[in-house]
Picture (cartoon, rainbow, N blue to C red):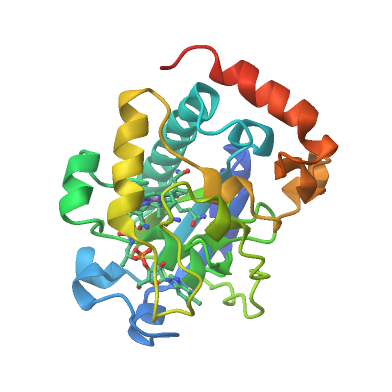
Amino acid sequence: MSTILRRQILRKCGGMDIPLVGFAPADRWNDPPFLPWVPEAFRPAGIFPGTKSVIVIGFPVSLPVVDTAPSIWYHELYRTINAELDSCAYRLATFLTGKGYPSVSIPRDGYGSIGVLKEKPVAFFSHRHAAYCAGLGNFGVNNMLLTPEYGPRVRFTSILTTADLPADPVLGEPLCIRCMRCVTVCPVNAIHKGDYPQELTDKKACAARSEELFRRSLSPCGCCIKVCPVGKDRGQYGREDMKMYDDESPVSVPYRRIRDHVRSYGSK
Ligand code: B12
């Protein structure tokens, strides 16, 4: 197991300003922490035989930007983060392969269009599960992986590598406080309150909403990640008072003004 290589990877990630990095042994997928779990074909070694470790990286979605969502501002940021994720993951995989450890990067999403997702709303590899296995966070009612740093306001991607790297522990204590703000705010009632696995999100309704917003250059929706009270980013931006989302409260006034302004430009 290479501690030196792990350190080199972390240094490389630091050089690319990647704030979240986690390491998971590929074996972790063979020992389901909860059910239903990831089927074999979707596991790291099912996709890239010989995988020993999975490196998961994450970039934050800036809170003040997603606070205007759905908006052109968030639409553009989403594209920037996606491009960064794919590029950094590709560079890390190429670096590791060059060092003698064949590796591949996985696209941060992996679907051609929302139309495809409406038929089959699942990708060939799940970064949420990977981030969970790499100790970066745990699942919330909003079906997102919550992290201590950014709550659900973080996007991930993964690198599958044949290098055997020291792992991070899985994050035990649930971060979700079950405030149900995500359930209430969802404009298409796609999030259910039930306990996993009895009830999950209505993926079809969520995908249909995303498709409609895409036509107006306003996708993705983002409502269920903006209203989550979890994450140190709320303190960093001075947005801990959740009354900012309550349209009846005077606290919400300046935020609504910004949101309405941004929404008035650049999209339909
Ligand atoms: C398909 C997809 C969609 C579809 C379908 C939505 C849906 N509800 O799944 C659409 C386009 C609508 C969509 C919307 C969104 N998405 Co999306 N999406 C994906 C994609 C491409 C594949 C997901 C997948 O196939 N997962 C595999 C299946 C088996 O798992 P699952 O559906 O997630 O369900 C499992 C888990 O949720 C878990 N689970 C659920 N609840 C609980 C509770 C407990 C206690 C436990 C233990 C487990 C658990 O078990 C389920 C079954 O195994 C991934 C990228 C990727 N390749 O991973 C991004 C991804 C999941 N999306 C992401 C995001 C951010 C969003 C949005 C917030 C939009 C946005 N960007 O602002 C919304 C949120 C919707 C929601 N609340 O679920 C992020 C999530 C980041 C995070 N922090 O978790 C991802 C990982 C993209 C990325 N690269 O970061 N998405």
